Image 1 (tube, rainbow, N blue to C red):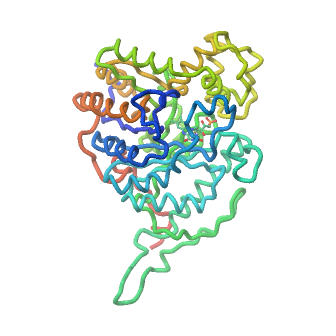
Image 2: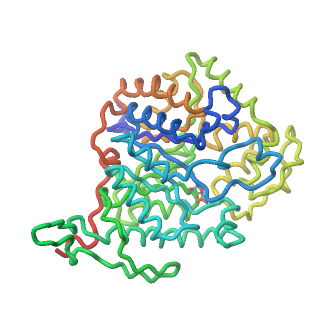
Image 3: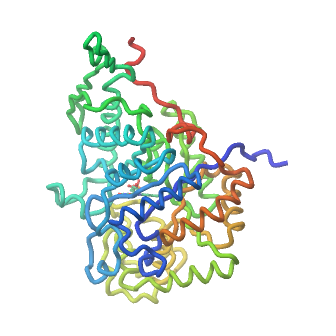
Length: 452
Ligand SMILES: Cc1cc2nc3c(=O)[nH]c(=O)nc-3n(C[C@H](O)[C@H](O)[C@H](O)COP(=O)(O)O)c2cc1C
């Protein structure tokens, strides 16, 4: 008997990078080549994901084009020209009814009032399906678009993020749920006793409020976090309801899961109010051999200029453009004091130091999945892997990151989803109509609601 066998069903997100998650996806003949600014492409994919009963679609973001070496950038469209995600999700909301819509926005280069307003609006437009992936930014090009010339230090970024989220939640509580009377007979539109002014004065922000949008249908849109450093984990344990993460081994995923759920107690939160969903890049074939061939073909499409450029920011922006790709990365190019994403830095540094991979091997491994887990095989083999992690209690679900879009999503929806459903591991119908309901998350009570 397996006493750790868990109950319930897994949660699934569909992560849409325009042409697909593989760094060379756009060179693949199946990819939608103008995907970044092709609304029809996103509309169709979101409808496919909704028919497959995914909990949510997720869009990443950066507040700048990627900086770097133009010799490489010209071969790599990612983050160069694509839709602002909350704008895109507003359009997708109108075409769907049940699927959650999660967009990234940075707390380092926004103001709380702007984002509180934008996500509250998206929650209303979608009927309670909005989510916000709160990021602190690690792209060094972003500050230049906001009157600054460097990113704030890692600790400061998280300090600001914590206060930012507190202010945003306060603004979402500006109006009690029943504040709007809309009573024509008495000519009363709202009850002023149910309107609250935040009057926040903190280390980073002074915000009076109230918000000029009614309380969101979900109370608060679902809060998502994806930083894996110590500061990132604490922030997630305090504030997040979904964590996207990048574990590649079961033991490591289980340790991360237990650590995160353990940290939540300090903030008085129940473990089931956080859903941990590591990224998973499925490469699906009718046979295992076919899947391996598909993967090898994609890897062969990575241009060495792009491969080197891909690794550079993860190592703190070091110039790799002259490094020979068939040799091990020299130790003097690995600087432990970098102030970029610490969790990613460690993963990449370990490939050179511990595994002694060549630069080509590093970028092939990292490039395919950007440091995240790739599972190559038949639909049954992929479902087996997902089942193993889920039943081991290492994850609450997965963020599916198709290598090539739209075809990778179609294949997953047509082959792996039915297999998971047949095993009772995934829903066949949505449980509710809001993202919170489908994820099994409580709807937060407004902070003033009990005051009558
Ligand atoms: C699945 C996933 C998606 C992410 N999406 C974004 C994104 O869209 N924009 C961004 O700036 N960072 C993104 N990140 C990075 C993290 O949110 C985080 O800001 C970064 O890892 C730095 O934090 P850390 O030092 O705590 O790890 C993502 C990370 C993961 C694992």
